Length: 276
View (cartoon, rainbow, N blue to C red):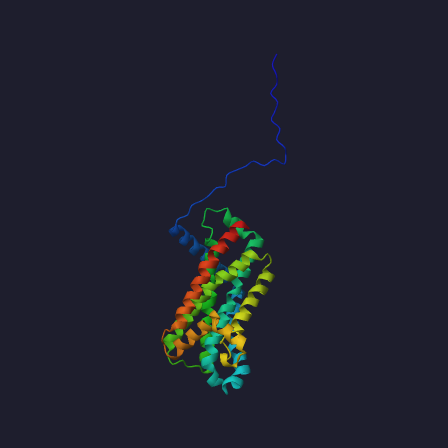
């Protein structure tokens, strides 16, 4: 007499425990993958050029608008106000362009694009780093447009090469500070909320600085805020480079602040993205 084998019944809701597959990527391979992701971002700009409209149109509207409103009231004439206006607007507009990084990152997470990236054997920071490198294209375009508009308005820096170095400093600092908006993008669920929070941070940092008005004209408490505001140091560094071509303490403080933001928020962004 034989006994039939009883099949093993598994509860339909039971889950099979599996060890997560970890892929160790070397530094060189991670950098290569970041460049490939940056190329993906560049192709996005190529197929959707309207994503660059703000980097082209805002540098035209900003100097003309602020020059017309504040020129005569602050400096007595537009020509006298240009050495103060163009470096300040250069920093403001390029920083504003970095908000798109956090918004795009949030949209990629909602659409499931990053789920596909996670399933691939690539470095976890490569998609974010690639997006930041592609976003640097926006900053370069915005900086060049501001300089061209300023030249058309009559701005003639004493040291043109120093001003170009200042524009490069702004692009570098903005790329590093983009990690802050990338962190907001992976933390906040909806892209509209990401844009609102990022603009709140930028609005306070930009207008509580020496970008458009002299610090002496501010209330005492706001003057103290402006003194410690990294945007004020960045604007002062660009003005010094354009006027005398020298690298001062504001240049060093700007580079240091940019590096601190990148060092702090880059790992936070990657860790938060991995958790999501």
